[in-house]
Length: 60
Image (cartoon, rainbow, N blue to C red):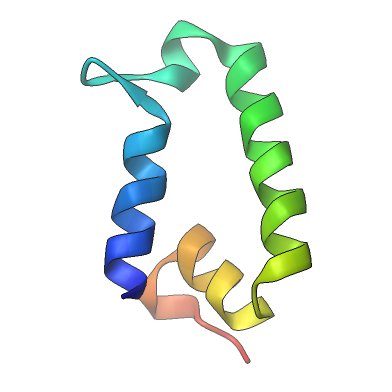
């Protein structure tokens, strides 16, 4: 499930196979901040670290 969630979140920040960070840098940062705020309120810390850092750095 975590891989599916990570893949879904990556797809959300992609428009027509182009990275939003390159197209709209200010909006990209606002999206990241909003996502972080939402995740902090609704997900365990270990899952947030998995999504942000990947498999190698999961902390509990």
